[in-house]
Length: 371
Image (cartoon, rainbow, N blue to C red; front, side, top):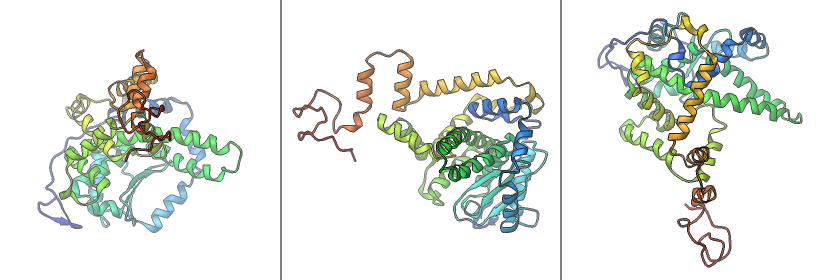
């Protein structure tokens, strides 16, 4: 890569040597909740056979033909700089078979990795035009991480089930059953996105570029108007701000999503980049693919449960703090709940006002939401 070279309006940075991770297992970078599910699924006898049998029902062939016929396939002759990034990402993560990659005309910045028999990576023109070389490298590494973990299989199933839920909506309880599975898959997939963000960092090996990429996805190509530290402060405010009402709204907002919110992803990645686990991988100490069959399902679930417990214990979210207090046997539960819903009132919780309903008004009506 040449210094000062311009490509698609973005400055290309000089090439540099990056660490490679021969034989690395995806367990090295997977979020504990993602890893525990994958380890369990890999242990199921005949699991791959069942999914391949399902491939006849899934629109995978149609998707492959669609991208082949109506998108641009990345190669040495088309989007060569993306092809170099893809091959480099596969080399760094030691993925033997380079997955096909397509650029799809879509102004919305997006990327995905789908497919049962073999993964396909698709990036939109909106994303290609939005990100610079190093930011795009992290995204390509993100998608290669999905491929290495086998996430494309489950994402394809999620797309199919979401479509199926619409078709069976007329059947009594049919839609409820399908949506219950979809909701569980989405929760897993949100964790898999955190895993893939880590894979992107291992490929790009530039945490600032990863942060910038996420920030641009949230706020567009106005980097001179944005600040990484201020962006991360938003994540802190999102997690700790508000009351129990806001905590419930956060859950409702995230349920339909396959991805965590962008500020949350940035904060999670920043925390992992500063962790001992990341440093050990960079030093060459990581789980090997050849040992995947020996991975313990019980140990993986235990680590996942421990992670969730730690997150709940250290979370600044009002609901999580309340749940942690309940688990710890905190007294005065009623008072804590009332204080948690203090945002419903126009003043701090305290003795009842003269109107007798304690809501701070004097007309006896329910309190209005604060602006």
